[in-house]
Amino acid sequence: MYKSIIKPIFFLLPAERAHYLAMSLLQIVYRIPGMRLFLRHSFCVKSHNLQRTLFGLSFENPVGLAAGFDKDARWIDELSTVGFGFIEIGTLTPKAQPGNEKPRLFRLPVDHALINRMGFNNGGVVAATERLKKRKSNVIVGGNIGKNKLTENEHAVNDYLICFEELFPYVDYFAVNVSSPNTPGLRALQEKKPLLEILLRLQEVNNLKPKRKPILLKIAPDLTDEQLNDIIDIVAESKIDGVIATNTTISRESLKTTTTEISAIGAGGLSGLPLSKRSTEVIRYLKQKSGNAFPVIGVGGVHSADDALEKLEAGADLIQLYTGFIYEGPELVKSICSRLNMASKS
Ligand SMILES: Cc1cc2nc3c(=O)[nH]c(=O)nc-3n(C[C@H](O)[C@H](O)[C@H](O)COP(=O)(O)O)c2cc1C
Image (cartoon, protein in one colour):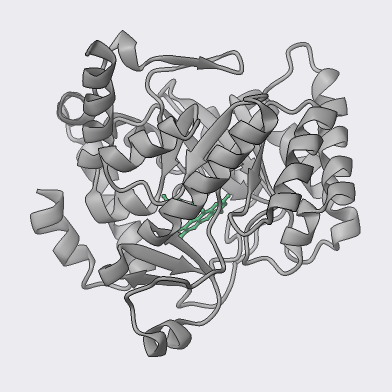
């Protein structure tokens, strides 16, 4: 039904408007008596074969919703009924900010891809926290944190600390985002010195809590092998809990969309199928080179159960998706979970 009826209608609308409209509709459906059960029954695959325990957390299944979809923690309860094992909110920043000028989200249908330059549009960490306090679902929630556009890189650590403290009681794990291509200068924080400063400070605060929470680092797919080696060292040195690989890419290689259309769209991060190969390479590299030293959440271009299996076989411990959910709908989560369940039985 999603691919034959819902998607063709939504794809007639500008991408960002379609996103909010789709989620408003899900909110309405969710409130109709009996629909929660119906949605759960339709999309959630329950089996102990799917359960995973990682960094001290028990996941109902290994398929998560990637950051950026529910930046402001508006729809956690609704999204938990369509089968996700975990939901990552954010990227949140200390202060609310509008993000870049619209349009800033573009579909590349022939490539099953998106280009976005949202620029961390969000209502600020405090507003999200207020919503998190009211959530009913007990699905695992990750808090993806970043810095405000106007915060200089040398003060970035303070932004990450503010978000960490504010969200701490209400999320299950943290994702430190230094890899979005849409905040000027942010990716420079992936360099060893500034990154270690941020992660060590967060760990210091984390270790003072009665029970610390897992911290993961979200990285770009555009890092060189040398930079990935640095990431491996940084994870070891800071003793964070794992890596999320990967964010969107600035590359425009191997696209079927015409170069005229691509240049008309302009700057932004590319996600979806064309990212799949590179993000899998990054996962495999991190796992092999580090000797499986830490967990990796694999994300980038998962549009089918085969894509999910490929990421898991490359070493991912969990996977996330965003663009695949737009192109394939909630059936995708179900088909991945069903396939993994079958695979674990055979
Ligand atoms: C519109 C859009 C907004 C995004 N916003 C964020 C964000 O705020 N923080 C973040 O860490 N990643 C963000 N991402 C990246 C995704 O979480 C994911 O890493 C990337 O899209 C690759 O996965 P996919 O191919 O399944 O979409 C965004 C992606 C899209 C398409």
